Length: 231
Image (tube, rainbow, N blue to C red; front, side):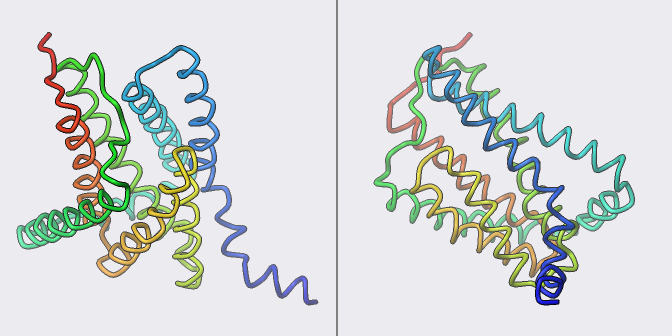
């Protein structure tokens, strides 16, 4: 009886386990890809670039799978994010950029302003592809963590449970980088989940994440005084 009650309390978790596979694949794949690329002495920016491309492919497969398995749910989730009024767009952009910049400054200070990626042999075309893939990756990334997991997979779960699980899973995917990244992702993940749950929209989380991520990349470029080579 006790065992049955315990399973019943966490049935929402067991029902949603199947949707966790993209995060698991990303972590396992990232370790394998990093080891392979390091053996071939790839530049660190290329390592990050290929890892994000692989992540985009994982998300594409996942969302296609959702489209066939739970078409009504994923369609309803996408529709819930639109339309946006001009006031909504303005509030999202201004609020997210300001908050993202503040978080970026705090995170940069906490990390000692050390760039996460060292760039070399960076051409203009590579810089452009790097940025485009980064944006596409974060769009899928936020829609998965702050959209699917929050509003679809665990929509019937207790609020504390779904937030805690979302943050744990989000922090877990950063384990491929370093322990400091895992620790910093916990309060950041809490902020993004809280804002997404409160507004019902993923756009705040997406823009804040973009500001933070691209801020670090621009800082890395400037700190290493790299001028992209025109090709």
